[in-house]
Each structure stands twice: as structure tokens, then as C-alpha cells.
Image 1 (cartoon, rainbow, N blue to C red):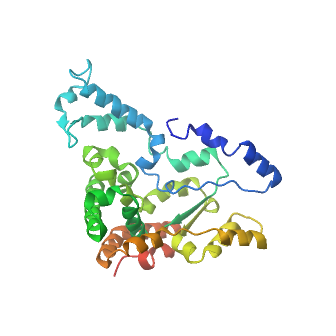
Image 2 (cartoon, rainbow, N blue to C red):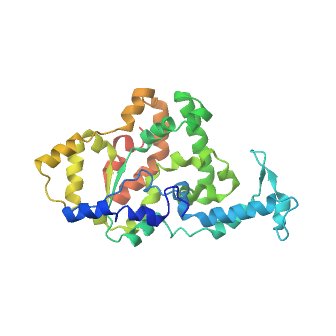
Image 3 (cartoon, rainbow, N blue to C red):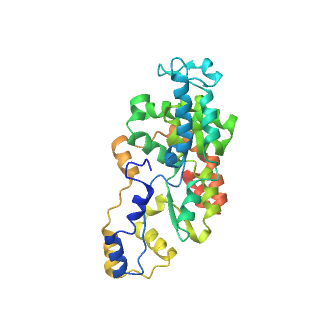
Length: 311
């Protein structure tokens, strides 16, 4: 209900509006689709609309402690509040209260999606994680602004974020940190952007829920590099997987006219490729996740070449 675009009913109505229904009447065998760059890795920050119980509980706790004098009945832990890096007071115990109030891990995006849309089929295109991180660093201005421009800034960024990740994972576990990093306490909440881009490349941490709720015939996972190398080949593969009829010559021509926007090409053109030593370090970091991904999908493409451990 707090989404800027309206509530979930507003979003759903886009699939049942007059224009959509008219198009379906004209072509009853059509499929309705939606594209999202952030749904597969349903980390905490990308799923906040599912976690307002956490935010509301934290906000209520923080307000109790921030009151001067503290509100009557406020927890005695408020007396131990600390001065945070932002100059305000950081009530550490509020993380525990918020975590206790939040939805369980069993309430997640794949479960939610398949409950609402039992016939939903999902096509996932995954970018090799080291390339993805290089792109993300340059695509969002806050990272170069904090860590510096270019390769040196990227090195500082990866070093800071990976150290914060290892600290969380060693204490709380890999999947709990991937799914709810900033919910584990003030140490994680204080990390710049909560390791968000680093976590988004940990595909294997999010795959179990997708495989649990989507049978193989409803979940297709592809490396994006194959699509950008041969767009029509992967497009035809998806058409066949969806059970669509063979495309007409006109439909093929229309598909070919769709301009492919490869962010990697754009990033390399503007910022060059990541230096080899940085790429090796990042690929070594992601290698365990890629190995688990390849094994879970029974698809060696995800632990081959740049996806594999650097030699």
C-alpha cells in the first residue's frame, strides 16, 4: 500500500484494464508478461513492501527512545542508547524488536508470486556476477562518490563491502545475511548501502525458494551473455519453452528490430574493463556461489569460463 505507484490492486489492474482485455479478445492465445531487474534476488532492500512490519516496529521503538524524556513504558534499554555516526541516537535493541515483528523467511517473493498467479512462468537472465558488480559500481553515482572514481574506487568499494559481508556471514550465516543483511543489527545496518550490489550477485542464495515454488517447467534460468551474443537464438529458445507457435516472418523481423541494450558494453565504453587483478578478486569471491548455482541447476555454464574460480 505504500508503493509510489499505488497499491497492489492498482498494479494488478494493469493486467485487466480495457486496453489489455481488448488485446486479449483480439488474440486469445497471447501471453501477458512483466519485466523486473530486481525480483530474482529478493533481498531485504528490494522487498521492503513485504517487510513494513519490521520498519514499523523499528520506527515505534526508536521514537520511544528518542523522546526526551523517554515515553512512559519505554524499554529500559533506551537508557543505553548510543550516539550514532549520523549524530543521532542509535537504539541497538530496536533491531531485535523489529526482527521479532517481521515476517518469517517463508514469506517471500516466489511464494507470494506463485500463490497469486499459479500458472506464472519465470524466465531469469543472470549476468556473470563480477561483470555485474563492475557495471553496478559505475551505474549508481553514490558508490564512486563515496569510494572514488575508476578502478581505485572500485577496489576500495569491493574491499569494504566484501569485508562487511564476511563479518555478517561468519556470525549469522550466508543465506540469512543474503536475504536480510541489514536486519541483523547495527553493525550491518551501518554498512554503506547494506552490501546491496554485492549480494545481488549471490544468485545461489536466492535460488532455493524459486525452485521450491516453481517446478522446472515453470522456471528457466539463462546466462545473459548468451542472449547478448546471439539474441534471436535465445529468443526462439524462450518462445519454444513457453509453448508458443513458430513465429511468422513478420514477427521474427519485429523481434530483430528490438534494440539490445547491453549495459556491459556501455560501461566498458565509458570506463573500460575492470583491471585483471580486480576481476580475479571478485570472481574468487563469487566462485562458491557460482559453483552452488551450477550444481543446483545442473548446468555447468554457470561454473565455466568467467563464472568459474580464477586460475
